[in-house]
Image (cartoon, rainbow, N blue to C red):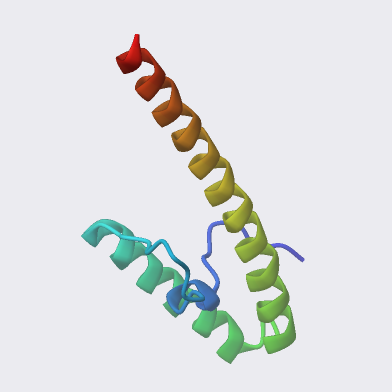
Length: 87
């Protein structure tokens, strides 16, 4: 079972990392709305808490992979800019 477009509740309290995620007001409102939708699904029995945790775990792993890729791209871009400045 996969529910698309809903951010897991675990993203509201992500593990503390050396980089903090900053959200715009619109993103924060979307996250809150999606959290509310997940709670609604849980309360109506459409998904179980175990399924919610599994979805959250998978989505958190995907988000981490995307974050790592973006960080790598930014670091490569910065290295290229520094190399260009040295020329």
